[in-house]
Image (cartoon, rainbow, N blue to C red; front, side):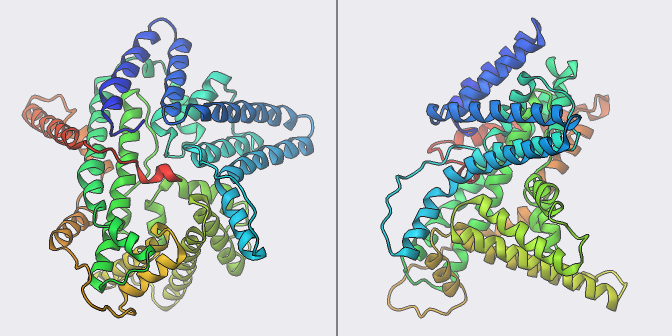
Length: 486
């Protein structure tokens, strides 16, 4: 069930919202149970047969977490063994559904064989709820987990706003909020902020991402088919995808945060204007923040982080980013994308160390502009591998972008309207305040009760209400969010 669908907006959400708070008047556990069932219904809307998978995953991981905590006081070795088994079981499950087909295809290529392996359909959100539960197991071993009932753990994993594509939530960020009695009473401020965030995210998805997508898809399809295109058309398609991905995924995150806020829950920020970054290090502090945090805390630091010397630090960065690329999908393009970003990070850290030795002065405005241009250029080039369906398609498109392919005869030309739209969206991404900044302003102005600001409050509320209805009116052909594929 998509956030940008009529059945979600007109039926599921209002029914879930009303019943959750109505049932909380009877008992908190009843309202939590209802929210879990509603979230499972939301998950099973796509393929009901995968409900058994997520329920089994939840039950097994909770059992592992309880056993790990119990054995910590009795035998650290057995507790560590349980942790290893639990994490391995999660990775094996993820590996089977996400990488089995890719592995068999590579074996067939290497052995020039034709091993048959039926196509496995990737269960929705498996990458997200697997990482979330691995973090819970590791934190159980680290004695960072307070006791949670099975009901509370189910809610932590299945809470529908963040279930499908994140943010990847840490237990400390969400569960304590459900222990607060105020979360079970409707709050006008939470509802105002929630609806504002949801309307911003919906607008990003249906008005911006979906409209620019029509200029990205044909270019990548042509590249995968080996069709030669002009430099302008190739760059048009790649720039369009760069913006589509940003507004699609940040739009989903805004909607997820907004939906959670309706229920009085504050989820962690997942985007902070990443295309404003002046370095790749800064980019990864701003892009998909919760994934970056997970990779840092549960992969990079356990590998040794920066504690084992520069060479090992760079190797750890490369391994983390390659595995991060592989997490996004089973294919050489995702591995190459991760390798590129790992290389970018190594170069960034190496250059920063040299620059500090040469000069302690902060970068000038011109220097910052150059860094920004270099960063966005590197990110755009890497997105080619992230989006292209095949390695040949990615290389073909890169050759077209840099004029290495000669164009013969009549070829499709770039679209002037597309360039106008791309320019406008880049300006929004580069210059406009992000959702978090807007919400901070809304909280300070719109929710202010002073008489002097009452008129402004009504005006701003009317603006976001109009934005929502415009976005709602644009919903026609439903399109999935891009990160649903991961």
